[in-house]
Amino acid sequence: MIISFKHRFIFIKTAKTAGTSIEVELSKHCGPDDVITPLIPRDEKIRIESGGRAAQNYKVPWHKYSFGQFWLAVRLKRRAQLRNHDSIFMAERLFHIDRGDFYVFAVERNPFDKLRSLADYWGQGAQIRKDCNAWLSSQRKVPKPQGWELYADEKGIVADKIFLFEELDELEKEMKTKFGIQINLGSTITKKSTYNSTLELNWNEASHNLIRDAFAYELEMFYPKLI
Image: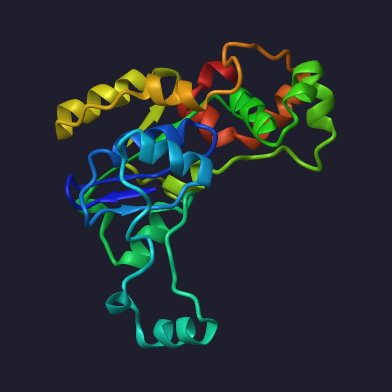
């Protein structure tokens, strides 16, 4: 996640949607007071080598603690901090900000592709490519990478804009138009990519129904043709 006080935007990092690549590119335009959550060491190295700012200001400043929060932190010997896939609601609570003062955005992805990417991340890519339906049925429940719950509540989406993974060029254009920021996601995604994202999986009807039910909100809102 990035909270940019410099540009007045908040990037909510959903899972398996090129979020790290977006974070790397955006961090190049962040100021010293902006909040940037940590990445795993490999990706942090890519961020720094690409000219981006390293993780910073993600631990909640002491002056923002309530009396009770302060003593809890002292007792636990651990400061509260914002994490990679935290929600907009957590960011508001920890840093005492109002999302209405920022342009809040995130990225969503076709759930059927999202699961394939998750399997690759778990080191089970070969298994899902061999038989995606057997892989899915071997799970206790449909795995659901963080997404909807990070930018929506019971009333619906609270973010200003949800971009689609399949149309990331729209995000690049929006950043340039709205903030004067030039980002190049193609180069960063290439550095991180470990598989061919155009490979199609043949989900059978049972798998399709399981995924459809698990990602009902996302499909209805962003991919109704896939229902």
